[in-house]
Picture (spheres, one colour):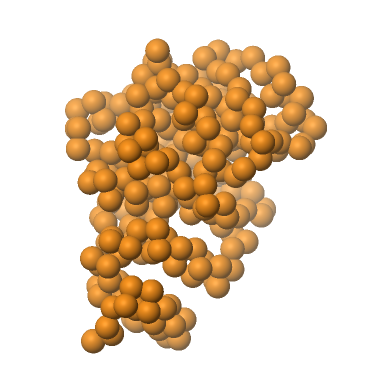
Length: 261
């Protein structure tokens, strides 16, 4: 039985898949399996590639298209590993990521999330500053890439990724669930994750109004966390760029029935 299961959802991303798989096969830590979840791909190249995909330690699970959250859940349900690493089919990881993350999880039972610094590549190339973890920062902005390590037992305890988060932020929502469970996060201060930037991405195309709606959905999903931090968060929102933060703060107040004073 593998110690680590790397879960790679793939929807029409066959052109990039080998790079993602190669980056896992190049790891210094060898006790892993790779579970590719074909999330109902319609692209002929991806369909043909995954129909008879043959790589070491790798197998393919075929599902109907339900989105990233459901695909990750399906892969984790079928996987064997004690520790889980989600990896999108167009991204890559550095060769020491598994080794370093497993060492943290093995040595720190209170840590439920292990993440690292990242670098963008593709249409844009630059470092990404992943700040040190704090709960308050996590409520305001997602500090952790989707490719963070966690324990399979914790995934089960929180009910997995929320399949209703079909349009983004499913990873952020999941990290907040683990925080609610009482888990802490540990940042490896090295670049061990490489995030591909394409000309059009889900995050880049999300307009401001939709981002506000997504944040409000997170608040509805995790009211206890946001209520605890409501006033500090609202002070932060009030201080940013005027009218939109003010309207958002009012919506937050009404959502949780927190008086403005």
